Image (cartoon, rainbow, N blue to C red; front, side, top):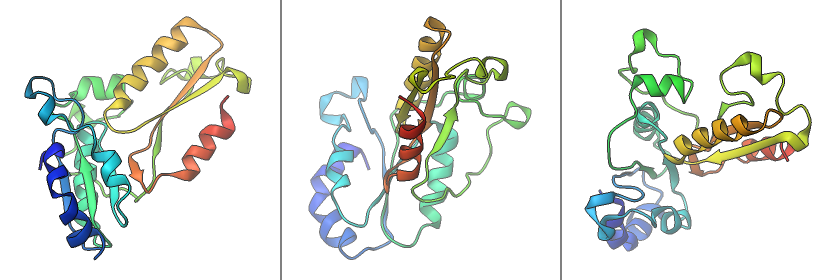
Length: 199
């Protein structure tokens, strides 16, 4: 269902799904701004209106591999309702997934099946220096020179681009980029780790 159209079914999500904690999978297409589809189709509110509903597990895919993983996660999760949001458009492709996101793909091919993710656990995508191990030892030696960016969903792409740009401008700064994966439950341990290790 389009994210914006789920707004019309809000009461049913609360009353018929969430309060009863039923294992219903809600897959939200058009999450975020959708360009030529127009403002009536922008899926800008689903995180806010779903976030306050009890029992929902809410995840947002950052790329096509994560989308496969999250579909597998939704299919395997029977302890309550899940919401998976993804944007309009195409994926990034194998080359960008490897160069910007740091994936190591066998034969430059995307996996054919997704893997079930641990519920409520994010991941660190990029450490200071990016994927260049030689550069990582010279950046962010002091806490004041370390910055963390926590992204959710497709904002991960922009976060990785921004991290590269910031490090290009200052040889001392080290930027860590993490993918929350889940809005609810939020990975509190990951947030604490980022806060403890960065300024």
